[in-house]
Length: 468
Image (cartoon, rainbow, N blue to C red; front, side, top):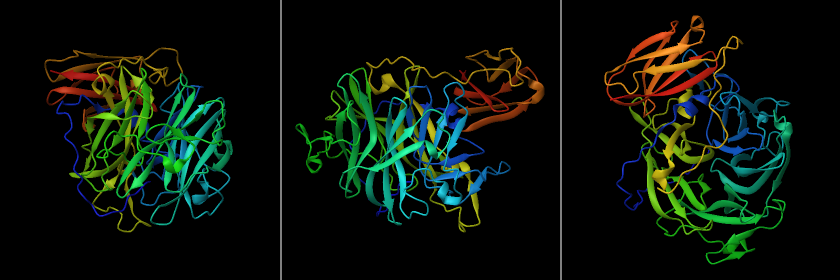
């Protein structure tokens, strides 16, 4: 996890547009990351799509196993300094946890220089090149998280099931004050790969840009944008925001959509509950900016026991665009109340350190955007007993003018017990129960948009419900 330890200073932020955002919590993806074995919790949550249709998720300090389903808790101390997850296109609810399975304890950390290394690696972004994923990692040391070097890890992706698939971990020839690879854009029309990064400026982070040809190896020399053009001198690099009043967090995203470039970042909250809850976008006609038109996309409202959670490092995942809506994750890290007085013996709620996901309509970011869905389907609805009957779910009336709707579970083996869970747009559970009947009527309180999650064994299906 990335910490910024400073005195809390309230920065003056320019007024954002007053238009109300239609963004909402994506309970499907949030539920995918509520794992009970293997990887169970972490931060970072940076995705790298592969040509095979799979996705590699790069994670920070991670909890592995040791989950207690009785109270949804994990130990207070994480087990490894980083991990990776492989998600399958055909079964996106299933993940493979990537660790160094030849080792034990913290040495199971997959990205490391050697066993028992006192430095540690946290992920940036990456891209795929044939059967190899090029991923960027940053090396840190000490309790003050001093940045040491930029690294590239080359991962052989076919049959990637453990750390043996990591074939190289090589430092880049960059000064320690720069971190590059925070976000990557593969621009096939320009034939460049753009590696976005930042430099810390007192208590904020200035976004920077490097590039290299798609034909060259990532370890060959790069070019850097100096505010007017491209240079091989990294020390001449300049920020790509139009205004020095704008800045990014240590993890941010840039994506190219319909020949424009969009930057997504969360405000900096200095790891203090209640601060830095705004997720914003900027836009530019060129990869090097200047990025302008700051727009508020979403304000994080997650609370635990009535207290705002610590949130940070929102990241976009354009490969999961659906219905012209962009998927964005953000990290949570407990609250300002310490629930781990004795970190070596206490446990705490796993959802205090699991990523959360939202959807933002792209035409809210820019009214001209209309992006077709990439090929990444919903979880297939198949019979959990292996029979060929296709499961179907219908909800009626929907929209409903009353608070009552009926759920029809066709070809679901309800004798096994089907879990029904309804959440509101803030991700709060408003109803949760189990049924063994194919027809189930539920009563909801209030009006608006709700999300119905149907779970049987390890299968999930989500439907929207509108109460008028």
